[in-house]
Length: 562
Ligand code: PEP
Ligand code: MG
Image: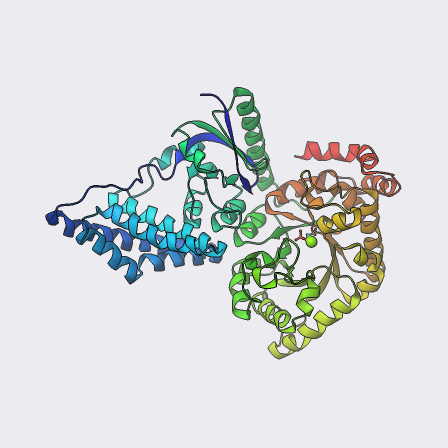
């Protein structure tokens, strides 16, 4: 077959190569109408399949909970409750007894009716639930067929899973069994995509119905970076991806082996490496890779579909699965950073961003602070304030948290200001006395300083001298106040920028879970003295391109480190 390239939407980065396995294979509705005599037994089989699905999901949820993956367990609990829902049970029974549908078909037809209703409402949150419901149908109809597990799991080692849509339970069960995932529909904010990202499984979604016509066993590449699926790729493509996969596997193995080593440069400067996270799975992966804790918890990502400011209970439910894994470790919880491309429906038409929005609604701020103090009680808690532009904003957050902490008998945690608009870097000397730490968000800082869209392809040049100068000014102000500085933007894991950040005196780097091990190795490979000298020269360069030529020797060191 000739090579075909199908475009989709990137849901989880990385590249994988393997044989197409259709999750939905054999799931067609069987049009047979059963004899009256066969119906009672078929109805019994259908109801038993639903009950067994509920048990399987319950067991899976218990295993996840024991591993601290409470958020994912909660999602499975919802599937379990659906399998036991009397309305569904009655509808399935009647589809077999009254209409003569075979057991598996009755389950598929009745569950699909519920999923279609959820789809029709047109709410992205409910559309994600529809995927969860369909996942239950797959499980129960498989059991009604008499299959204990999805077919051919043992041969799925180099499989690319192809399906119309997936529920999170499917992805969690597939962990370690497939190399990549491609979906005809599905969204990047769906649970399946979130779980895939956490597990480091490359995934492309929204490829369209053409995807489902790929042949079972056909060779295929899922490229989550370029958001394409390549069916029957030519040999050159295959070789490139194979090499990349081997390199990733080897470097992961090396990294795990090295996770006990301290992150100290060759000449003895300690630089802490923490993780950016939004889900419990990312926290688990980051800790496995040796992260010192979480340097940025993006709390707003759990509420992008919210219809109102999250309540204390909603914040608690969202925070608990992550913070419960961080007992005794650094947990830097950022206050909701709504606005811009992270505007939930209830804030549509409202201008402002980050702390400015929260300070407009004092209840909203207090609710989140209350939940953070509650769930982060046993962590080394730090509260991170997004989009700070002046010291009064930090004082306002402190004024809100002090009475809550006093009422609860908690101490007031360390307050940290994000430096991600140039105003904060320029005013760093005046903000520093109000906080216990700075965290530089190079994603927004670069975009605002250089006037470029942070989502443009190819990323943004945080190594531009004008951005590096803001970093240097922030470090100077922090040194004068005796507080540490973290960088939590993508630059912290970019080989072009990270050595310069270390050279400018950054104390902590917070990076995506999948980059933790690599960045730890980079710190150990660097010489702080040399990085400092080059970074100081970079401040006087005229362009990002000139900085690149200056810092080439540092990058070569990182290449060798992995
Ligand atoms: C940043 O701006 O660099 C940052 C870390 O915040 P976010 O990417 O969540 O805007
Ligand atoms: Mg930001």
